[in-house]
Image (cartoon, rainbow, N blue to C red):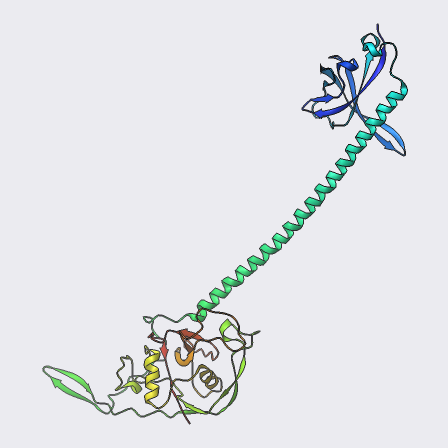
Length: 377
């Protein structure tokens, strides 16, 4: 029976599924079926320490390489060492007389140990680089999450802004009923005569020219217009600013149907109710024929705030002002410019909102829109 006489040391150069390839083969005396031990070495307190991983069996041998079968799932890496002992009767001819010198074996161990240390250092370096890359990706993800949150907040603000703009620009359609106070039935006024025509009686109106209502005086002065930005409900009514107004006289109430008698305007309703469905062009022309004009939106707001005129009829009113941003409001809006005239008042009966701004095309007619005039003092 032959005895073991040669220690063959090899390095794992490739790892497969249940197999490894080593860098020693037939020239080193290996043959299929030889048993081998897989291990690696660590230096602890300056001393090398051998850590055995598993055992294997030689499957296939080439001149300078061999394949070993190892257990599946074994934790084996390239650079680990393999040790096999060969029987004396199978030593290569060049080595049959004596085992390799101890110095050569120690040199091989040193080489393999250095190779293992290099591989471990590279592994640590690669792990550090991967960790830095992972940290960078996590930082980018945090930035992206903050950006997404900012975009979501911006989108929500845009939606609120659009809803606000819709409300600010909303005017009820002409076919909606205007909410006005009930007016008691009146007897036939002077100037109305009944004349027969055939078998029926028709009402023939011959009203006297309506008398002008007594106008209310708004003194000249510097007044605050608009709403402070921190309390404004709508973007177009801010900021508050100071406006110098001249003295003027203004209709205390909106122009009525009776006042438009004799005008070439088609208005419906009881003589005492506000005249509606009148375009800005017609309203402005009527005020000019009275020797006045439509009030500016600043004049209307100040007159309403100071109680010079009445409100709460559920009526919007034409003003002489184009729909423009207030001084200090740098927000750009497509509707600003000389396209729309400002409406003031409230579309809800019983509600008075002196600062609310809406707008409408000057040629439009609307059952919720009336007007009043101002004249010089």
